[in-house]
Amino acid sequence: MWIVPESAIPGLVDEQSAFDAIEACFAAMARRDAYNFPVIREGLGEGRQYGFKSGLDRVGGHLGVKSGGYFPGNSERGIPNHQSTVFLFDPESGRPTAMVGGNLLTALRTAAASAISIRYLARADAKVLGMVGAGHQSAFQMRAAVRQRSFEKVIGWNLHPEMLTRLADTAEKLGLPFEAVDLDRLGEEADVIITITSSFDAIVQDAQIRPGTHLACMGTDTKGKQEVEAALLGRASVFTDEVAQSVSIGEAQHAVASGLLAESAIAEIGAVINGAHPGRQSADEITLFDGTGVGLQDLAVASKAVDLAVAKGLAQEVAV
Ligand code: NAD
Image (cartoon, rainbow, N blue to C red; front, side):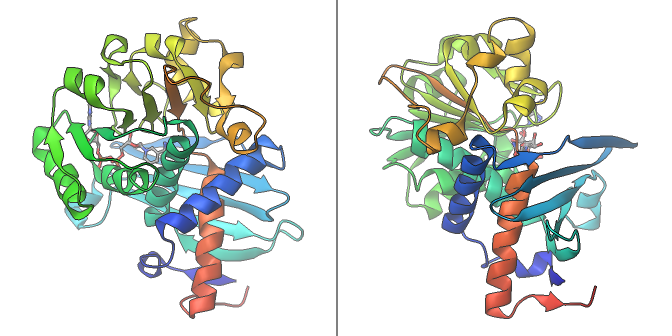
């Protein structure tokens, strides 16, 4: 089996290869060639979370699991709080084929998901990108998003304003002006809004969003988390990576529970990729992608990382 450690991942999987892998993954899910197994998530005490996301892509040949979680004491140890490792197996024999560092890959696959939603759902003339959230994931999100439309400006809001320098620095490196704004202005000016926070209360309010906006809601991946007011999901055309996760741990959990959105009204982004769903149908439509993060995404980028690492001589082979 191959080992591709975390230290080998930078420079291996880029934004385009992550985009291609996740696009194929969502398409396979919508064709029912691939499916995710139930997510396991356990609290270990002292704020530590640990769990497993796994799945099978019969046609792509991916079987495996991402194991990891959140370890709040890590920042004092000088390592990231989020830690994950992906294990890949041969779907025919069950033998392990690879162990791959999953930290950077998680950020790349999550950014690829929202970028895919922008590619398929945002208005073609989108010019202003709005960012809500300025944590670790936000820079990856911005970098992947700006590849999808001719954005001329990035605007952003964060609960902790001192973190906004991350957005400003990332925009500068991308050659785009950045402005910190309040949420009213963010809704008025942004054509595309990415939310990527760990909030447990709605930040973006329904009344702040104008017709034609595309939102990629990426932060809500656990029961109880919320980034946008539930009424907005009642008004928007809602898309997701996987409906089962969207209604249970995703942004749609609140709108579905309060009867503002029917589960049957949520479309899979993979169906849009495959041409089975038309996606955006008018310039005034509000589209909202509920990106919950599925195990198959992790397997898809990990498999890509193994292929690239083997080709470049960066993977270590060990006997099983
Ligand atoms: P981070 O800890 O680096 O940053 C957290 C962000 O949330 C910051 O912008 C912070 O200011 C903001 N925040 C914290 N508490 C808040 C509150 N109460 N209200 C509003 N904002 C608040 O985290 P990160 O690595 O950038 O991840 C952000 C979120 O994305 C997390 O919730 C994480 O679980 C989620 N995530 C989702 C996926 C997916 O596939 N959908 C993948 C990775 C991470």
